[in-house]
Amino acid sequence: MKDNVLIVEGEVVESLPNTLFRVRLFQGERVILCYLSGKMRKNYIKIMPGDKVKIEMTSYDLDRGRIIYRV
View (tube, rainbow, N blue to C red):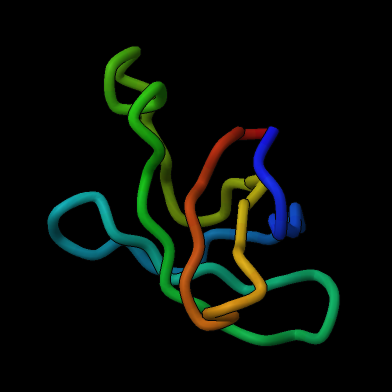
């Protein structure tokens, strides 16, 4: 596991082109922009609006994240 990584949970609000998603975080009620991780693309995991997901964020940019797991 990497250093300086925050793992949070949220709900997908909107699906955008190029596997980008707007996700509302459960803590703080913020909406951030997320993309799919490589393993989720490789295994053709589908993400739809309304899905609950786990997101990996760095402390450097708290407005973007990577979706690593669909709950």
